[in-house]
Length: 347
Image (cartoon, rainbow, N blue to C red; front, side, top):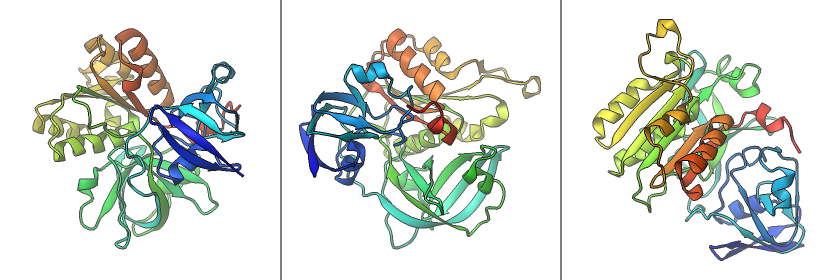
């Protein structure tokens, strides 16, 4: 048994198999729907159920509350149709252009960019052509089938020779994968991953000024987007705000300064929330999204791309839309949900 799902306003229809989620079916058939974690934690795939019935698997209440559900909203990543359905969702043009592939990769280099941040370069197999958009992510497939997601930090034009992707990984003590990265991982180790995934990438059909907002290792996909703009000579005004706790956490600060020097339309604003006296910090302090609001109280003519902790992304989306006039459909986000985030307070 299968059901038909129609996506409006795009007017696209696709088939969903029995016990398959709406999002899984859309990805399988190259239909563009917004999404992030695919685990019911981030809320990026939230859309409106106009007609039909679905049942939801386990999910975070913050991603979809009972009030949201009663108001006709759903999470496509964990909604299984019970009937034919019609939904309203912000479409992602040509999201299915690049196939999702599973492949082995080899660890080329491991750089400790900060005390708790490792930068990995992973060599891609020569017989598989990984195509992706700057800002998308890949998932490691661990031996027991568990998965861990990380954004690609280099633009597709910068794979190098041999072709390799760059990932920025923060150590989560006790984390199954990150303990290995910061402990036993060695160069030439073989890992298995799947990608590209995600709908976080630059919309090139707009000429609006851009705010790139990152916290911590949420800088990774933002870096890839800046590289894309540089390589494709996209000259839209760009404001890059990067928030961290301490000066040492700005692990690619010099890269940002160089990029701002090379791109006259790029402005870089680092923000520290808890600078120490020994940092000698004379720059901006506080919450990074509030720094944006202080500089740009009117965001009605901008696009925002935010990546980082769920708390930062949620606060930025709420405040930018409610207090700064940002159109709700011009906020694009990738919320870095940890395994603890995904498994806490599930509905």
